[in-house]
Each structure stands twice: as C-alpha cells, then as structure tokens.
Length: 186
Image (cartoon, rainbow, N blue to C red; front, side, top):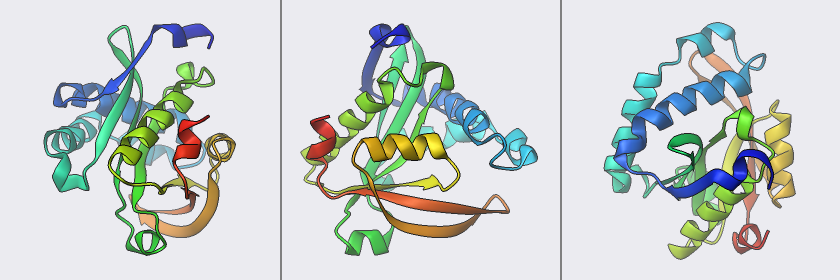
C-alpha cells in the first residue's frame, strides 16, 4: 500500500468517535454524490445530525441490529468507516442474507490505497464471528467506482430498488456475498 495507508490504524469505533464519523459521513456524501444527487440536498446535510445518529448507534448497538462500526484512523483523524450488522431488509433476510453493510465511506483523498479492502475484510471477519456468513449492501446505481470495488471483492448484484429519501427518488442496487469468507481471503 502506498501513500497514507502505512499510517492507518483500523479499529472498532467507540461513542467518542461519533462526531468525527458524522463529519466524515457528510463530507464523503458531498464528494461521492456531487452530480448524482441534488446540490441543495447535499448542502443541507448536517454533520451534527449525523454525529447524533452515530452516537446513538455506537452507544446502543443492540437496538440497531447489532451494528458494529469500524474506522480507518490516520494519526487521530478518521478517514474512512464502515458499519455492519444484522440484515434490516426482510426480503434479503428470507433469501439467506442475514447480515448487511449499512454504511461504507472513505474520503476520496484516501481511496485506492487498500483502506476499503481492509475495512471490508474487518467487517466480514466481524460478521463471520457472529455466525453471519452472507451479507448485502445497497449502493446508488450511478456510483460506478463503488460498484466496481464491490464487484472486485466478489459481490454480485442480487436486487434493485427505487427508494424515496430526502424527497429524491434513488435508484439502488444490492450487492450480495453468499460466503463472506471469500472477502476475508482477498
């Protein structure tokens, strides 16, 4: 790994990380979805509101489908995070995908350095350790770079949906892994 990757510490997030995760969540949405989502929606995102949400999740993971959050920390600055836990989509759960990655973001400045692969590996190990062998994640259909990344990790498209969030219609595809140990081996 080149660049920043040699100074990255991967660890499980704590409630003390909520403010940093909230800020990164908003910053990465603005980077990733510029041109894909309306600018006024991205401008209206609140780091404080996201921090409050992550504080709740990190303080009471059981209430949030057993969600675990992992971060990539570069000298005290969180530059990426992923959240995983039990499947919230009943249809996907009935199809045998009992776990999900509910959030996965890395600042553009730290992409293409192996951080994403390392975070996905960490989440896959966590899910496998809890007996969940198959997982999914949803991604915007138009997010080509993310889709290529998930396909390189062996994810296969297993579903599609149109969802109305923030007053905007979003086209999403679900990627699934029927054997998370394949992600760990990569």
